[in-house]
Length: 286
Ligand SMILES: Nc1ncnc2c1ncn2[C@@H]1O[C@H](COP(=O)(O)OP(=O)(O)OP(=O)(O)O)[C@@H](O)[C@H]1O
Ligand SMILES: [Mg+2]
Picture 1 (tube, rainbow, N blue to C red):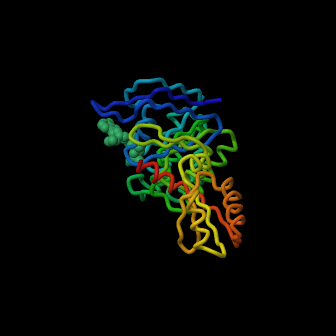
Picture 2 (cartoon, rainbow, N blue to C red; picture 1 turned 30 degrees about the vertical axis):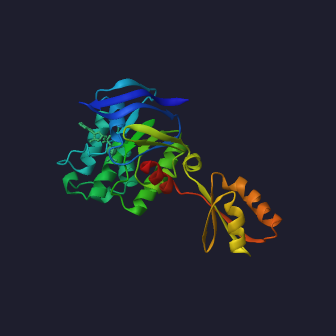
Picture 3 (cartoon, rainbow, N blue to C red; picture 1 turned 90 degrees about the vertical axis):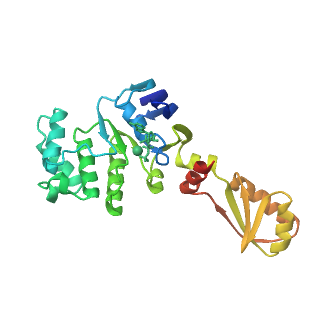
């Protein structure tokens, strides 16, 4: 069941098409990662969801409440962290926000900075305060635009552990990121480039769909093996034998049997799959 459905979304800025015919749905209860290089149209898509840019197409939102952490700070610079949280709580009509404000301060580890003006916070601290404000009303759907940009590694981990907990509690998250380790933690990924969707699937599916895999072999007769396998495969020799294939687990037994028939013993074999980063870079080059 979808919580958000975007159909044929197009966003123009004068002649420029920032988003082109985008179809994207977010399933209830998932963490969906929206990936793409700078200028791909991620933020514009999100801004369309909130009606901040004129668009063509249709956006259907079935969430009862939505939290939004924009890419650029919506916080009041001349208010303290706590005052900002209280302000966002009142925007959402929270009756007794005190406890929730405390909970959020704890979550983003800003309890000790609660009385500092947002203007004086470091970049990562501002980011943390923004996340707290986006979540203050415990929304069903959370839309986060680069929530961890500028956040230090341990806290980045904390953020993701919290996202996982929210997901386990039945919430839905749409998140953009440039970090591939974060993308790996999403159940599904949508990759955009120049306003268009270029790939969609689980991290595993995307790796399989876009990347060649490599079978690596250590054999007794390197040169002989190279000669034989080159008849069938794209092979290179670099300390071991590397063979590029689409589906390594199914090719490996075939490769071994070709060599065994030629009387060559395979000492060791390994399969190397492309990382999400490899796939991302490859898709961006095409
Ligand atoms: N208000 C605007 N007027 C004109 N062009 C715009 C406007 N907002 C965005 N754009 C352009 O639309 C394109 C997509 O921008 P967008 O901010 O959606 O990219 P993004 O994928 O979020 O990139 P990043 O990873 O840098 O945040 C860019 O070329 C940008 O310059
Ligand atoms: Mg952006």
